[in-house]
Length: 115
Image (cartoon, rainbow, N blue to C red; front, side):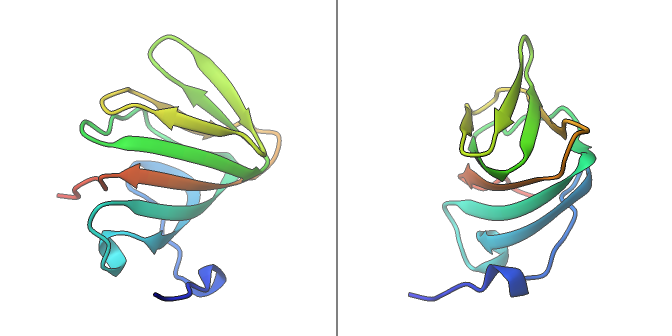
């Protein structure tokens, strides 16, 4: 068992993202094998390219602000206090709404394999 002081963790911009600053709370970078949990701040104009996690579930929980999430057919706004589940293999693009920064937790299981 251990306590993680999230504010003291280093931030990184995830691959294929811009203006998104993430801290890995638990996952492959810190000894986790089955899940990756990240705390992220996406600036109002930030986002990610359309992408897929072929064998992973991807879950977002918005703490503050809102995210714009685009799939193959639909676009959603996910607000503070709401969550979103993206099924394995489901294409998605997550961006800011341009209105405000967004703070969120993301959970990916199993974690993506970086090459």
